[in-house]
Length: 121
Length: 106
Image 1 (cartoon, each protein chain N blue to C red):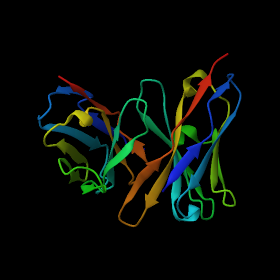
Image 2 (cartoon, helix red, strand yellow; image 1 turned 135 degrees about the horizontal axis):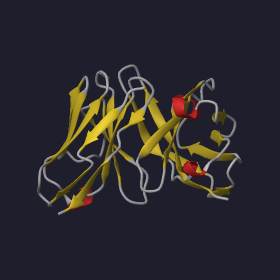
Image 3 (cartoon, rainbow over the protein chains, first blue to last red; image 1 turned 90 degrees about the vertical axis):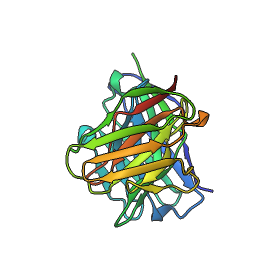
């Protein structure tokens, strides 16, 4: 079965960086995109980025351009997301999710369990 | 960027009620609209993709419709397991989520 397993809780100070991992299993890693989204406490979902594991091409939401970097390792079926210059507003649960991108449809069908990142001095 | 606006932000309803949630895009997104359900403490779950296609395993009381800029998610007869927050998401240009609609028990 499809599984996306994320790395554990992180606590960081303002100005630091954080790297979150997402390991995929149960399907061929290079056949599906991986998205990243986040959810601040009590707030809605915010889409951040997407990577095509087949080639490594990425796209980022404008609000995260230059501060977020997504990479993949096909040998371990893992996608990493690094967020730099953290501020308190980055405190959130970060999710990776599997994307289906076809000519007529584009959606997310599986989600990781989420990784809580707390930014506090 | 395409903005997605859901209404209402929250609603109270009873088991058996018909519930409708709307989602409006700031520009035409054709049928590139998906709906997700999220329960407290859990990850979102895909309900509908392509505006109207029910994901496998999702009960038929859930229906999605619309195209262009205006979309709706309808639950024909609300069940206890349907109390949750619902999000629309466009995938026409980049990806954007709506702000969510919380469905609470009346």
